[in-house]
Image (cartoon, rainbow, N blue to C red; front, side, top):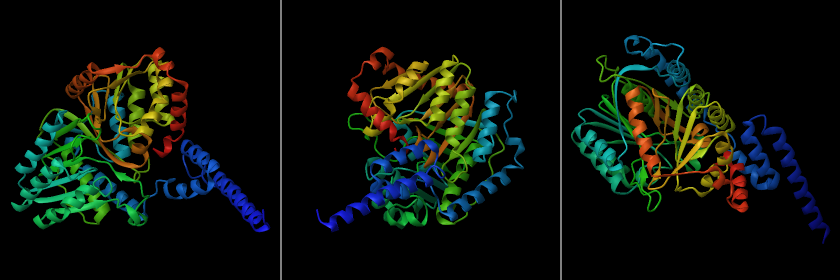
Length: 474
């Protein structure tokens, strides 16, 4: 070996150790401890790959402009709610789980709990899509859509056609789509829709444009439709055909709502539109006359907020459960705080039921979430794997009077990196309807048996353990 080769080898060795030492000093002070461990492990094994990966993906940063606009939107939302005391819902027991949850949600996400809402839960994919199209066709003034996915398929075209019809009859239509998740729909429909008069905007641009706005893998994962400021739809369903997993079409839950909470969904759309474009939209005051009897409240979350809103509320709900907690999600990669809350609730005697999809379109995530089953089963958490469809619905029911339906998965990505929206309903009727849906899942699910699960092959345990180490990257 020549002296030249020795010098190169020495410089590589020195660079490797300098990267490791710098990472040890830098990352733990700027990254959550669980994520820091994962990054330090990666950099320790492959420093020259791990360092640039951390610089790109290690911290969920947003541009100063985006953070300022979010703060401005939050202040405006709070100011405009102050005089609306007649719409504020006040639970009879101010020390109940409902009251605690409502206070926490308002402090984290700005929106107060409101009286007088009507909430209809839709769990038929084609039926929910048709309701959206019918609502757009019935619009007379304004249509606002915000979605993570819009594809160039039958579903995407059906919604695009409805928007085009609405715009051509004089309805003001705005379509806000995630730049990466909805890239096929933007490419297929943007020009046609703009020609028809629809305002189409991509949010959180990917590629090199991300440097001007946010970390490149931050996404807007919300699903919101607001029609004429009088009704809205939100939940887990995208503007795409249900075949994410071949042979296992998606199963979703969508909440179709009327009442004051519609103004909150409208305000959230307006906030995202303002953050992306700088254009301030006027939001109608919520109706004083009640549309129903459901107390409801919007929970927005995302990296623009100071805290991890969706995670913190979920933990609080599980901790305040007294009899039963049912959690439904397609992706389950919890952080330690969430895992601990589920474990403690089950050990305290609460019936904790986790319903997941038996099929999954993300192999690494499926392995990682399986790595949590041993601990949960040992604590008494029941785990059911739903077979017929890809269970893409995301909802939680607590005891008999709290329901949460929205877009957030129970994973670190949704908690930290994605903009999400959840609808809290403090109503026994909504919970009863959600229970019917949950029971339908359970009838067609395989329930994990602790003894059978512990007998799985050793190689699978190893793969699950390794995948779980990557929880902060998923």
